[in-house]
Every structure is written in structure tokens, then in C-alpha cells.
Image (cartoon, rainbow, N blue to C red; front, side, top):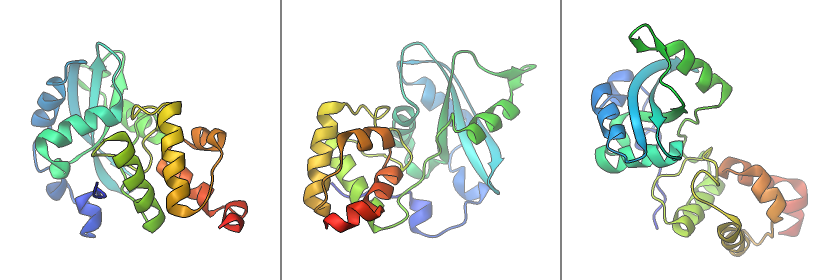
Length: 198
């Protein structure tokens, strides 16, 4: 399966608001509401790390992960639709009748809402290819949690076997499961003890 990279990153374009909001916030929220696990959804754009990011805020009726919902939207509207992350909440955070953007900003800063980020180098691209093909998923970011993506111990063993084939390095299943995302696994592969095995 081909490696999927955020198109804005691949093109080296700055994340300008007008570029990123290919669809409106209302359409993003409406698309999120189309998922059977979603009870209520809203979308907002906040400033984070000197850029504008668009977050879907979702009240859910049954368990669903942020990456799964992001993939749901991207499958319908395309990866360039502007949605960067999905924040799952028990109850919609409101300030009066509007979405509490300070609550959303705090969640992003705290890491409660994982923002999509594509691979930064060849190692991450190769790992992304392994994860997408093994897990049969199209949209995976380098910070997406392996378990949130539907991974389990059986899938982990399969991913680890492919990593060993690809990199000539055997990783410990405990280290892999403790790291839980592509960027962390890339870090494991660059550690001196791993490099000595190659």
C-alpha cells in the first residue's frame, strides 16, 4: 500500500487558514455527525504552535477513537479538508451557546487531542507503510496511538516481524507497545543498541 502523507506537508506549503479550510466548519461537524458513534459534533479553528489548526469536538455514544473519526471525515471530504484532529468529550464544552475554544486549546496543548502529522523522514515513511498495510488503514499520523488505531498484541507481532524484515532489527514487543506510535518506534530504531544490531 502506498505511503499516505499529508498533502500540505508533501507540497511544503505553509498551513494558511484559507488553504486548510477547504470545507467549512459546519460541513466538518456534519460529516462527523454522520458516524454512528457520534451523538454531537462541532468544529473550530484555534491557534497552536504558530499555526491554525482545525479540531472536531465530538460527544460520542459508543467508543470510537479520534484517528478513526478523522479517517471517517477524510474518506468523505479528502485529506485536504482541513481537519487536523478530533477531541473526544463526554459532554460538549460550551461557553454560553458556543463551543469553548479555550477548553479545546487546552486539550490540544495537553495532548488530549492528537493532531495529525505526516512522516518527517524516510524511517517514519517506511514505518507508516508497514502500519498502513498491516492494519489495513489509509490515514495514520506519526503520533496516532497504535491501540486507538485498532492494534492489539496479534497485530503488534505482525508489525514487529515486518519491521525486522524491513530494517534488519528485532524490537522488543514491550518496548513497541510502550512507545505506541510511529515517531516513538522510529526513535527506538535510532537508539545506539538498535543500530549495533544492524
